[in-house]
Image (tube, rainbow, N blue to C red; front, side, top):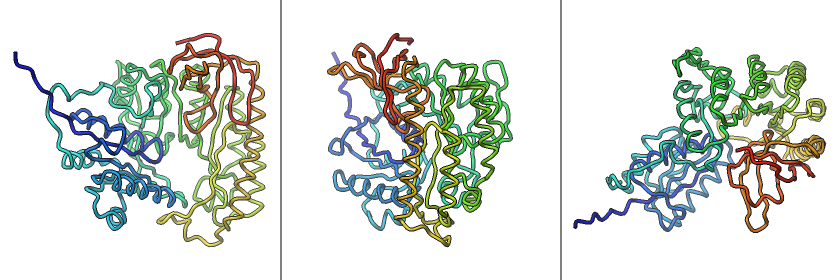
Amino acid sequence: MNVTTLPKPPRVGLVSLGCPKALVDSERIMTKLRADGYEMSPDYAGADVVLVNTCGFLDSAKEESLEAIGEAIAENGRVVVTGCMGKEADVIRERFPDVLAVTGPQQYEEVVAAVHDAAPPVPSPFIDLVPEAGLKLTPRHYSYLKISEGCNHRCAFCIIPHLRGDLVSRRPDAVLREAEKLVAAGTRELLVISQDTSAYGVDIRHKAWPWRGEEVRAHMTDLSRELGKLGAWVRLHYVYPYPHVNDIIPLMAEGLVLPYLDIPFQHASPEVLRRMRRPANDAKVLQRIRSWREQVPELAIRSSFVVGFPGETDEDLAYLLAWLEEAQLDRVGAFKFEAVEGAPATSMPDQVPEDVKQERYEAVMALSARISAQKLTAKVGSTIDVLIDAVDPETGGATGRSKSDAPEIDGEVHLRDAGGLKVGDLVHARIEDTDEHDLYGVPLETLI
C-alpha cells in the first residue's frame, strides 16, 4: 500500500497593527495565503516568514510599527512589511535593511508574492484548504465588513487620503455575497467599516447591481437594508452625518440595523471645525440627534473628539463641553492632537502646549464618564440582549456586549451564573449593576 507523506507546509507569523480596516486587510491576506497552502504560526520561532501589517496614521503609530518590525527582525529575521507605513519604504529600509519586502496598503497581490518568494508554498491538495468564508482573525461570531477604501475628505489633521487614496467603493453584490458567507460560517454580528461609510457608492454614482432578483444600489441605505435581512446584527461605523443618515433610522426601528451610530464628530466648536476643514453645523446636528432618538429611543451614539488642535482656545473647549452636555452621547473617545508628518495641521500656527492638551483631554473624559455612568445606571433592572464574547468556566462568568457596544472600543456586559453559555450565544440578560462604562447582570434566556 502506498502511503502519501504530506509535505510540511511553510508557516507564516502575523503581527497586525492599526484600525479594524487594517485587520480586514490582514484577514484577506491570510485567507489567500492559507488557500495557497500556508499554515499560521502563533509565534516567531515557528514561522518561516513573519508578516507585519503596519499603521502609519500617527507618528506614535509609526513608531509602534517600527518597534514591531524590529522585534520581528530580532526574533525571526525573515520579515515582510505591508500596510499604511509601507508608503514610507525608504524609512523602513534605512532602519531595517534586512527586511525582505515592503508593500503599501491594499497591495494584496504584492504581499502574497513577497511571502511566496520568502517561503515558497508546497502544492498539495491535502493542504490547500481554506474555509469558504475565508480565514478570520476576529472571533467567529463577529466580522468586520469593509465596504470601501480611501476617503474624499481632506481634513487638516489626517493623512488617510495620502495613504489609501480617494474613495473606492465595492460593488454591493460583492459585499452582500461576502456577508452571506460570513453569516453562514457562524457570524452573528457584521461590523460595517470604511473611511466614510456614509459616502459609500458616491464614486460609482450609486449604481445598482442585481441581487437575489432585485436591484441594489451602491448606497449606504440600500446596503444596510439588505444586510439586515441576513439575520445577523448589523453595526454601522464611521458614519458621517450626511442628510441621508436620517433614512437609516427607520431601518433601526424595524430591527434591520442595530440602534447604534459611530459618528466621528471630532469637535463641536465651529471655529475649530473650520480649521480642521470639516463641516460645522452643530445646532442642526443636535436637532437631528433629538429627532433620531424620538424615533428610536434606545439609539446609542458613539463618537471621537480631538482636543488641543492648533488654535483651539479655552472658549472652544467650553463650547465642546457644553455641546457634549446637551448631546448626551453614549460613548465618547477623546484624543490629544498629535502632529503627523504630511498633515496640514502639523505646520499650522498656534500649536497647543502638551500640558494644556492633557488638561482638556481630562475635562472631556471626565464629563463623558459622568454622562456614560448616568445612562448606564438607567438600565439597571432592565432586560437587554447580550452577545457573548467570552466564557470563564472556572468562575462561571461570561462577558458580552449589548446592542450599544462595539467590540474593543465600547463597554461590556459582565454576567454571573453564566458558565453554561458559549461564545457567540445571544441571550436575554437582566441588568443588576453598573459602573462608568460596563454593565453587570445575570442571563435569563438563550435566544440563539
